[in-house]
Image (cartoon, rainbow, N blue to C red):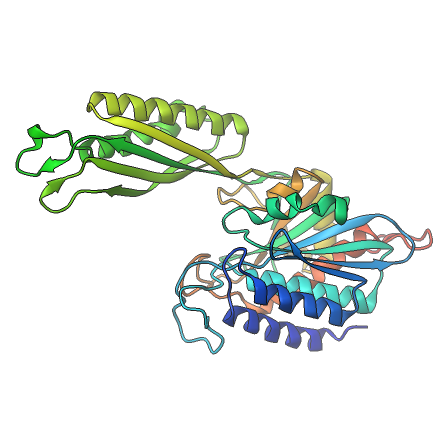
Length: 394
């Protein structure tokens, strides 16, 4: 049996090493090498690198069962400069693990070691270490590289840490869990000129400000109030200067929703607003609208299995259904378009800095619980050995 105290200590060391060497999406070469070396050290049956660029897939087989489940972790970091004085702070300038993917990778490695040493299941476990989650391209890259045909599995589970939620807590929900993310860019084109003579040109800054204001009516007045939607302008960029009015402006942002019909309506209304406002101010307009993340919809039966597994790891009163979906987005959703599964949250501590914050750090106290959950769901879903009851069943 694996000594939990020993593996907890190992996981902390692994995470600190990963935290000190963060890598951006599709650049996770050192991380992937680290992961693959550990999986081989644990004695997995098969370890394949380079899936979807820098992804890694490890396979562990026990018993005679052919049923397979997948456990997934993300590996990439963010283009954020780390603040603080951690002994293991980032050594890569301008890159840091500000979302806890170092912890996610470590928890899945811990589970791989536990399952390799302890067994307790009958079938196949796929350990998927995904690149480039942060910009929504890594899952598609792995799927496009033949993930489902080369390493088939019947269902998939994943974890993410949650600041503000106490360590030792577990949450998920059936149905919509996280939103789609669409990106947009609205370009306005006019004729810039001297700030002292606005009537000689056809500047775009006032028009751009009107567009930004008018976009707020999409959610407030143009969507069904029962639908969830968010439209956020995040940048307004012009070619003006202190005494020159701009002739070119770019408005950038993102939109969130949980249903394709709502996403389509947001795009439709955005195009109407951009064209109408531009016409009012006698400038040209163009809208570029892309869909980066799809909604994450948890399978109800898989959620129940996740809850049952979580109650064997965490205190039962710390295992709860999330009351409402989140408007953040997650690349794990791409896998759920192919097989049923469940994405869940574990607590990173009530005093944790927010995700994507330069002072954020994954809480080492959450590592062991996360690894145990991964192992527990694998055993529960592949737990019938020699016709006996599933692990966790009476």
